[in-house]
Image (tube, rainbow, N blue to C red):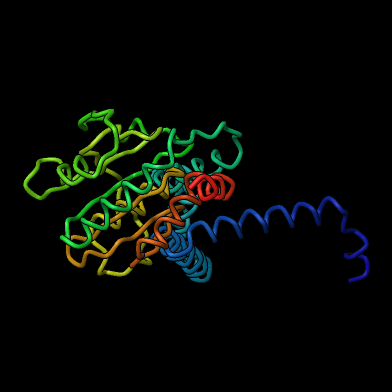
Length: 262
């Protein structure tokens, strides 16, 4: 044992520490998703199959298993392509330094609050996305481009159940309504309440792939929710919602500045 300890180099300790950290971050990233369950099932299948084929000396099954393991990396890339893509997007947001794109006027937040309050009372479903640093142009494809000033009347007309655009999302960037009728990716997380509808799952899905903020109004309950970084906060009142939007869109300094100016 002493000889073994003396043979350990500092590079070996660093190697184990790096690999442990990578595995830990991967498990945290996959926590609560179907991907983690599939990986666990696949690992157990390989372990028990290897044990059985070795113990009973099953040559053909052992040969098939070895060929399967040799192609495992390619198989995992194909199966888990969406999760791998999402992981690289998250790493890219953390690694690349960008110049923040802030909306031109924080007054539109008050207009949004008035709008969602009216929607909540009338139980009009809505999905409003606020672009931050990540570009959302790919989600505006096949949508209706507006480039219009934010107003309560326009948003209420867009999300009115009788209009053709009410099922999609509105994307707001640089203080304008850029597009309406946008379709967003749904989250694949299995660790969600079954009571969450398509709008809530779309809000979580888009915030998993980008750094945007997504506001949801439920047409069943009228509750207001906000999603960011793949997590959703539900049943918000007007005051809490305003504080969250100002903090997430402009930061504390911009918020304090706006309060002083008012």
